[in-house]
Amino acid sequence: MICGVNNAATRRYLYRFLTTMVFYVVFLFGAVWAFPRYHPTGAVAYLLAILPALPIIGGIVVVGLYLAEEKDEFQRTVLIQAMIWGIGATLSLTTAWGFLEVFKLVPHIELYLVFPLFCALTGVASGILKARYR
Amino acid sequence: MKNRLRVLRAEREWSQADLAERLEVSRQTVNAIETGKFDPSLPLAFKLARLFETTIEAIFDDTAPPAVGPTVFGG
Image (cartoon, rainbow over all chains, first blue to last red; front, side):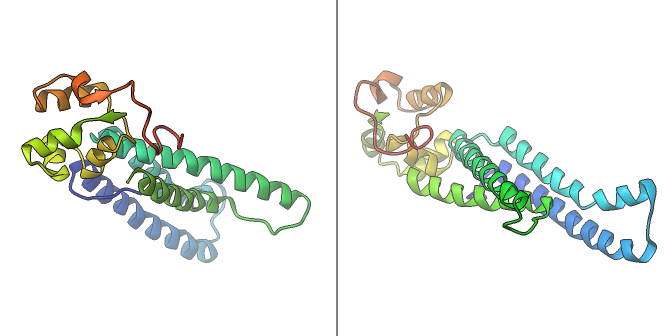
């Protein structure tokens, strides 16, 4: 997503993002481990189930902070353009898939997979944009 | 936008990396501006003009046809 680690904003971004990913792995395994063992109910069940989503939301905030802190306007522009392409491609694919699902032509896809799909598509867009700007 | 950055750089024998360091941007940024694929903001254009002790108009030429490449969204 972001190239070059020679500036403070990128270093902070990588440190923060890796931190959220560590929390993600811990929370995900925690929830998957605890659910079948303790059969939580009510608010506790909701809290435990939503736990892995929180670091992902944190990751989105981290990207926002990076955009606010990155002083290099070109790097900012490339990431913003890549994310707009990522958003467009993600919404197009998931909308098309959704209708295919309605008519039972494809299997159901879990909603939490939308975010990694967006990340992957944004990554592809970023690579194409960087090559075009070279 | 067409510009004279490459010439101005060559006069001072600066590499793209040298100019990038002076502007506090990445080398890719300098390259994208130099090739006319990315137009700098007004503050960065002023910074460039001050660095080369000239005016923005003396560096950038907005009357020339645009460079081939993505200027905004792949246009």
